[in-house]
Image (tube, rainbow, N blue to C red):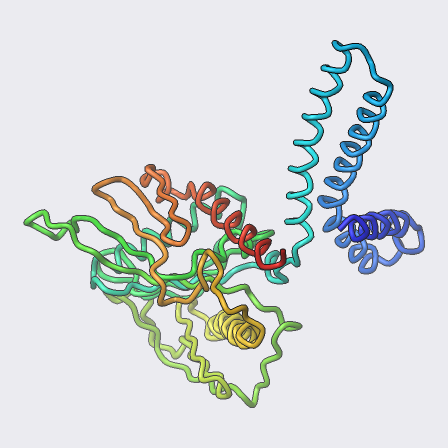
Length: 355
């Protein structure tokens, strides 16, 4: 591990020289490429340098003990050495995590699909509340949200809603949200006060760029139709809505939220590219998958990953056994405790697989 870390630090130092080179700075695209690479390595290099200082302190403390100092001084040095050993162990674990291969999608924007499942109108209402939850979380991080397609219901929910979240590290923070979300509560329309259980499906896809997935125009069937919506919303008399079918995979996407057919086509293409990329990556992962599942699940949409229990004011994630008794705050976008716990569990499992 130390050799690998030293090689990373050497590369970091080399990049520092390059980004301060006037010739490199004259070529903005090349300078930005080196700057981005330098930035990616800065966290691990900073941690490695801290680790080396701690190791040096341990060596110096051991040298002091070899001189057989008086009892008071020896106790002080031994206490310092013990503290340094704890720091060293902690830093070694942190460095192991930092050395794990990064998910190439982590820094990408995400396309989120939320669909009401079992439960009819109540499921559609909860789909709308999850949409609000994720948009509030995005706002708290300074990310931009844009709706790509939606099918609103008469009572204020969504049969489905598709939206993009643009921001640094969006996929790394939200990728564990894919799956079936279950809600337990008394619906507003329930006169007897009985608790109902409904489900909503969430899919989080990394937004694919043209360099990731090239869509051959000959592989696409594009249909246009008149947009429609609940209560006459979004209805217009022109064929502005767009449906695109990717013939090789059978993936179908549609978009009708924009009044312009061209804009709807652009939005639908964004979603299609993300879905085709997801299929391609799923196929690759299946070929090299380990025999056992990840601790935080596979992200399969059929999995029930979380339960929101309103009568008890709690939200429980079934993959890691975490329950948070602050449901109101959670639904208002306070997701960090859950997201950090899921990320830590995933990293812990990855470490077990490589050890």
